[in-house]
Image 1 (cartoon, rainbow, N blue to C red):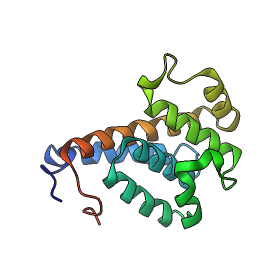
Image 2: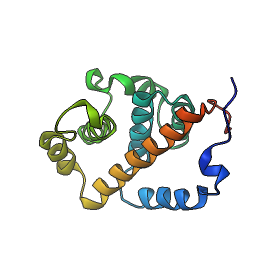
Image 3: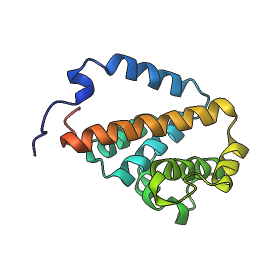
Length: 150
């Protein structure tokens, strides 16, 4: 496989401001492992192989187990995730699948996330989902190759 072009964010030297967004996300008080799970789940939904690959690797570096990484796609049926992680994953799925329902992020999903995360934590989760979806769209459009980033 070969990418259609370099990642557009690299072509236009936009990586530095994007990295600043990530820095803000990781300063929001949410456990890094949870943020990595959110990134991985959104990338799975969007079919972004480059982000699934890099996300699994980042989650491993953050201390995530293979068992839990394998279960992310079926997190609802797995006993391996905490209530807070489940709330974060549900929020990530809803915010990723905006066109799937008339109320993209229903109150029950929001309220469950708000029960586990304060405003900074919610902001971190939302920004992680947004940046992940941003990269998923760049990578899928340009057919970035999984594993090409190391």
